[in-house]
Structure formats: C-alpha cells, structure tokens
Length: 382
Ligand SMILES: Cc1ncc(COP(=O)(O)O)c(C=O)c1O
Image (cartoon, rainbow, N blue to C red):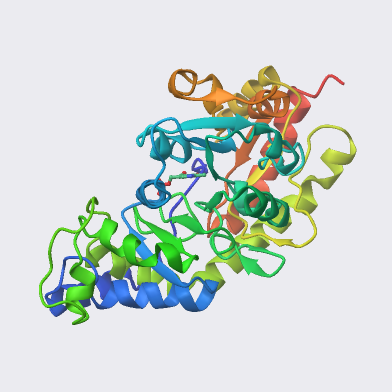
C-alpha cells in the first residue's frame, strides 16, 4: 500500500492555463492583471481596505514591521508557540519579541496574559491564529486601543476563517496570509499583507515597491517615479499571481472539502477522547475555522514519538511542530519571556498533526485505523 503523505498541495487544473495567459499577456513582473484580480478578490472576500500580494507571509510580516516603525529595543508581544517568521520579521528591525503563554484550549496567545506584559517599550501585539482558529480578538483590540498599540494579525493559516463574522487578518491594523504549499490556498511560495488601517496604505505600497512611488506614477498621480522611502522588493511576479488566481476562484470549495475531512476526523476520534486517549481541537463559539489543520494532543513527548513511529510503520506520515521560540537559540538571544509558559512547554511536546489535504477522503479511514492501532500499542498511561 502506498504511504499516505502528510501534505499534498491541491491544484485546481486551471493554474497552467492562467500562467499561459500571463505569458501571452507579456507582463511577467508584478502588479499586472492577475495581481490586480487577486487584490480585488481579497478586498471583496475579506473586507480589507487594501490587499497587497507578497512573496510570502514572512515578507508581509517584514512589511508590517517596517510600517509599524518598530525601532531597536521596541517590544512586540506574541506567543512563543508559532513559526519563526512571526518573531524574525520584527527582530530584523531590532525589536524584542516578548513571549507570553498560550491558551490550553485553542493554543492561541492567552489574551489574559497580554496586558501584564506591556511596558513603555511595547509597540505591537502580534496574535497568531493557530490552525486557522481565531484568537480572542475583541479583548486584544480593546487592550491595544487602551494602550495605543498596533495589532498585526499573523493569519498565515487563517484564510477565510472568521471571528464573530469578520475575516481573520482584517480585524487588526494589519494582517498577513501565507500561500506556501502547505496552506489551504497555495501559490508554491506566496503571501499577502492586508492593510486594514488606511493610515498605512500609502506607505505600504511604497515599501513593497523598493521605496519608490511607482504605484502613484502608474495611476498618473505623480509625473515621475522616484525613491521616496526605505523599502524592498516584496511583490511577486505575475506567474505566481496567475497560479494563485486559479486557487482563489475555488477557495470556497477547497475549504468546504477540507472541512468535511476535518469533521470526519473530529467525529471519528470522539470515542478516543471520551476514553481519555487523546484531546481533540477546540473551536470556540463565534469562530468559524477553515480546516487548516487537524491536530491531536497526546499525553507526553514519549508517547507522541512512539505514535509517530507506529503511524510511519503503517504508512501514515504525521508531523509535529513548533519548537517554542522562547527556548530556541535565536529566541534566547533576541527575545524574552513574560511570566512562565507552562502550556507552551507542555502542549508543544504533545501535539501531533494528522494528514489533511484535498483528496484524502479516499484514504482517511486508513489514517484513523492506523491511529487506533498506534494508540493500542502505545496507550496513554493516565
Ligand atoms: C503562523 C505562521 N506565520 C508565518 C508563516 C510564514 O509563512 P511563509 O512560509 O508564507 O513565509 C507560517 C508558515 O508556516 C506560519 O505558520
């Protein structure tokens, strides 16, 4: 039997057709017809004021750090349980990540720990919507308002998820998406910055275009384009945008298909949770998620390692992530923790991600059966 991979990027079949059109159009650099169509799609489907495609979510986070004007020594409050780019983008500007603990239910930043971590140097709060399930944004936005802080949502995993009806990435001052091939909607490598506060819109465009006012020039707003600010080249070429356009057109059905797989895992694993063998993900009321990930929480690091090995022996590839940033070498060097992080330390050792990709339906029962076998071989000891 063929092994079941952890991830398999889904392609709609129209990607090459649109890439051929980009080729025929003869416009291969950024901000051509396909990029504009993608921008309009994001603006219509999420309600953001201004969407800008980038090379990656990492690039979008770097733009957010530039736009927030963080200076050396400024502090950015974030979870430690996240991908390196959340911190790196700000550390590159000299900022200090201040890591707070996560909630044990959603594994998102614990909003009740944020206020105590604020100092006179705090500039940004950076919630990460883990697994496409929203952070408690009402509380976070209220804290930000009272302390005059900027909120950048790392919604790398959160496309088309909502919090109380609002798209993730559109609630803070800025938000970021990823279209890396492991995400729901892919472009190989790709991302977007959502500029929700109009204060940042003009400068965002300039920073993305090497610090020039090229966008204004093309709109006829200035008669020549020139170097006006710092910046870099954050825009992808049209081939990437053409690929992404094919995906966006099917985004709703891709996510509906993933949700069916997620729901099937959730129902099938309920008896194991009831028997105390694992814990399933929690999606709070008011949060609509996008089935980015199906994870389970096991009892210990030892049990997780044994279960991964057993699944592998049965031809099922499962993975874990992240090594918490506060205890990683660069986190120790560049960041600091605020308070103890017991949930981060414990849950990161116990989390296991099961395969979830469009087309898994036909093989999903094998994954579930393999997990039953693995847990029978290596049961929880409690
Ligand atoms: C939470 C989070 N932030 C940022 C990123 C970086 O995304 P990209 O690979 O598009 O740069 C990822 C990617 O896995 C992520 O999961």
